[in-house]
Image (cartoon, rainbow, N blue to C red; front, side, top):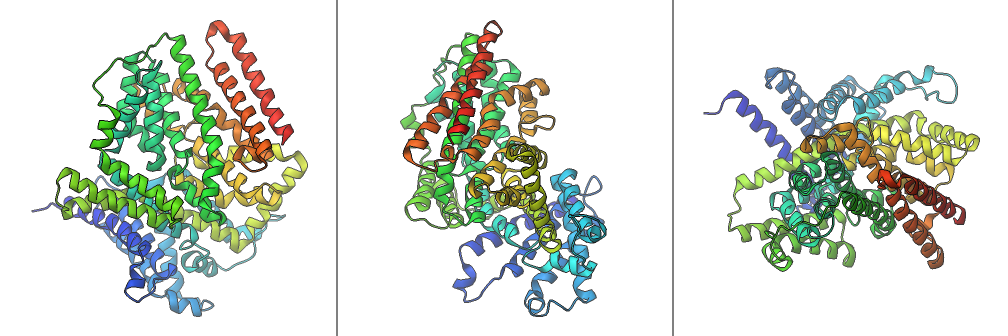
Length: 595
């Protein structure tokens, strides 16, 4: 007989499983097959409520969830379901704001934000509450940031039940597009993708100078591209690669930093970019291929700098390649892991050759992977295994769903109060007064600050809402602006004082956190510089003539190699190292001037 805590845990797991189920059924078009229609305003509140209820049960106020936590969870589910049930009626009579509408809205929003605090941390929750406070009291401010006056009931109902509020575009993207890739990533991890990518990297790189670190780069970037979580990637591949690097002679802080930077690079690597490539395309209403093309050169430069620095460090430490021969041949690895290879190939074919909707392509690849893995492992498609996959996907999507809901609050406040327009004007005036470069520096710092500790997709969702409009308003090309914010949001994982990826990697390596994080910033140095270059010269993101692109990319590659050599230079060659950094800076300025 199950104990009370086991029953509550089972309830939380059931709720977590429901969100992927609803999202999958929505993406595959089950309502249309049944001759019905599911509107955003009916499905999204339901997912938000279920996610809120699951979060409140999984993060109770006491050591174990009790009656109080269950009560709060049920209230949250009930209040958000009430919005879903009444969506049609409220849509046609939104001017009516009775207590039966705004009171459930107050409870739903408060519980959703409390769930976000429990799951995602205090900093992002405080940011959202600041926007709520602005909506309530901003009309009393003076100056350009004065909010349009609204009654509390108007604010609550706009955030609670309007398609421009919480159950809006951002949550829809999370429940469909992001969820599909979360399911695929969860299935890949359960099917042995981490070991497969690490073994392939070992076969390709282990024998080279500093090979153990290069294994980390290849394995972590390949797995991280699909996983959508830098920290999850560090925890998966780092368990293998960090001890391998330490055994081969890399100091612990350097081993940890290499793993953190490589795992973070997976989020920047096309064609998936932790699912953010599809989000950028969706937000800007452009082709997914355009986003992938734009991301190629920046990602190439990121990994070139990392590889060159690793090679220089290995040379300075006199580290030879690994002589371990226990990894099978590449052909054997591919033969034994065909259930992983075929679905990835199918995913890219569906995306590029057939231009299938990204969410459906990811779910098709996930379904194929699930079936092929069952055949390979001779496992029956047991309900328990399916339930574990669904609940695992629910756990992975939960923080992104709640942050997406919080971003919906921000969007609602920006729209309803006029703050979005005012912020764009204010930042544009800042740019006019102090120049574009100053505006970019401020935006980069805010991106790092806002992105600290958040999953990749969630980082982009928040930044695209809060900061992207101001850059575009100032005249920055939209794709360049969104890529700029995305890069600096992802770099928050490496940037002290928070540097979550470096913190986790340092823990695995038993290394000093500060030495690890400073080393990681050096290893990823080009990622802090190159976004500024493509703002001024879009040839870096492959926009322009063949001649301009060739010159810009060639110069950027030269500068990146000089920068990498300079940063990794030994103490004996410090003067040469500084000279190389200076040359790299000069070439970067030349790229800007050419643009």
